[in-house]
Length: 135
Image (spheres, helix red, strand yellow):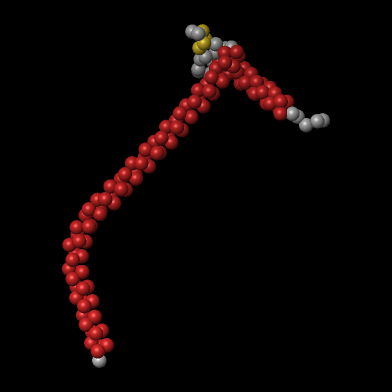
């Protein structure tokens, strides 16, 4: 037996899909007629719940609607994740700026006396080094 071509594989998958759709539609139509299924398929104000054809129309439409809902919700989730990341970065930036505004005046207040002490120590070391070199 020769290997299947791409067209033959595609047609085989389509046949499998149609058989599954017909089987599922027949099962749902039978379940509705046996009062085991509570939902209804309404097409143009006509109840098609007992019809295999009605379910064959409804199943792909429901699947398409579910896919569209999933895509829209995924897009909304991505958008909200981006907004959340932006808000988080703004909050972190606000914390950094707030800490800088709180710490910098305090650092400047203590920096001047520390700088004077450091300068005195440095000049004292220079004086000691000069005296050591002269001797």
